[in-house]
Length: 376
Image 1 (cartoon, rainbow, N blue to C red):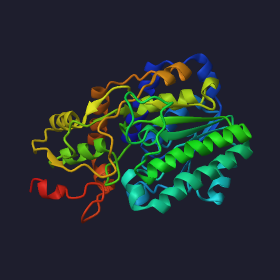
Image 2 (image 1 turned 30 degrees about the vertical axis):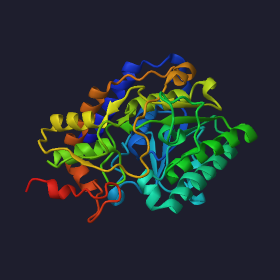
Image 3 (image 1 turned 45 degrees about the vertical axis):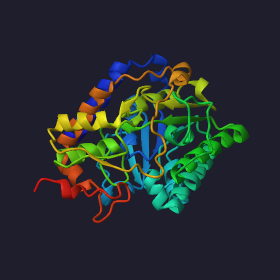
């Protein structure tokens, strides 16, 4: 239980710092909430926070097919007494009927076929999960007359290849470079349709580069967990590009804050807004910070940027989220990165077992052979 205890304490400490208004606490108390994709990196943190908010009279229903977790082990789902885990798929009517029998009055839809390279390799599955699966969940939510439907969109997807910085919500691009981006754009459109046609109270939250405890490394995963993993194994870190590229890395519990507030504020209904840190971090600086923190002395490895990665910089405006839902990121990057590395150290055996880098060429980092750079 050590793994779960520390995760719970981390979330509870964050909620203490956040100091939510009494109206928000009262709003969530006793609710039944469905979280699709609740075993994922963001969802696993969200369900702990929601568990605390709904209390003993409420219930968190987690629907996840564990497709993103090697060995299909729900180790990320904290076994709290008011959390119900259902192994199931958003594409399955049988599974959706099962979870909606629990009478959820809110839905947080985080389930997705993650992410860019994965969607390029498997475009049909990506569309089935991210579009058809979403439509099915929206339809069941409409029939259940839920109070709120919060959709996890992607700022990296919506704004396309050539945006002006900082990224503001009114800018939309059709120059999308992966099926994942296309499907996330399509998802917002379907949510807007259900809002306009059926008056389903939807909210579109555009995430930026999430990181933090809960995400295991793998060929389709994000740069931070992969960098931490490789550094802890004494491998060279591969940078696709020059290293001057930037991302708006957002600590996972700041995203959780945004989701919780999106579920409460009426001003958010029918709206879309960025959830980000509002700050840039260079990839080269990130690699050097991780190497220093883990004691990794191997040199950084540079290679060509991936064809679909057309954004040399990412920086989001969070003014709209501040205005609509009082969103205010609390965790600076250095603190969040420390928490992330500590989570890796505390759970190293599990993470090693779940790290998903199949033998042979990795489609995520073509041309880079990390095992060749490992100390023998």
